[in-house]
Image 1 (cartoon, rainbow, N blue to C red):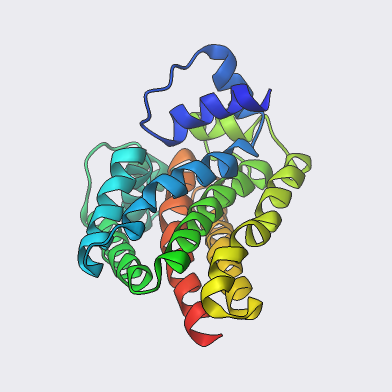
Image 2 (tube, rainbow, N blue to C red; image 1 turned 45 degrees about the vertical axis):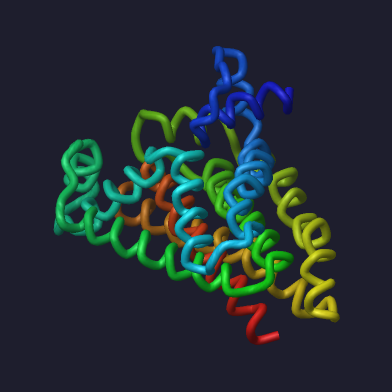
Length: 260
């Protein structure tokens, strides 16, 4: 079941050439833990540029290029749509109408621009650390972002019928347990290479934990915004949680590494 769900998750969360069928899509919908499990592999692939002997800006640029080659623009488009909806002065029905508009307005352009700039700055900060630190932090941020999406899928109410409701309506809070376990285990899995650089486990644990959990906090805030302004969580809110969660994870991880 999990392997089938992972195949469906790779199709939903990446652009990797993986064949999909109705069985894998249905398994993915009903197995939210597939979100963070896909995040492990996706984060590892996107983090490869930080292991290369290239200048810091080049590593950051290669990371961003690899990230969107791997993931596509579906979730970025969701962030842009939410940015447009946030700029609307109206009720939930008016905001939902904006979400369905294919054109990007000022709000969407601003949200997208800020997200990409802050992602780039986060990538530069990560690239400035040792490779043994950068790689785990990138993986942790990606897993955290995917865990944030899974959290909304398990705890949210759908705003309208669509891709988001196809995921949310078949899950409940009971499905959150394996998702939480996969996140809690993350620092233990990634702490060893970071601790080798730090010399102590405190800084290593703090950095990986911050990169892991900050995206979940962002997702909770995104879900709350969706409930208040859209009447629930939509596919665009899920995409927003993913994009902003990744940014928060990178910055939180580097900040924790610096402070501890």
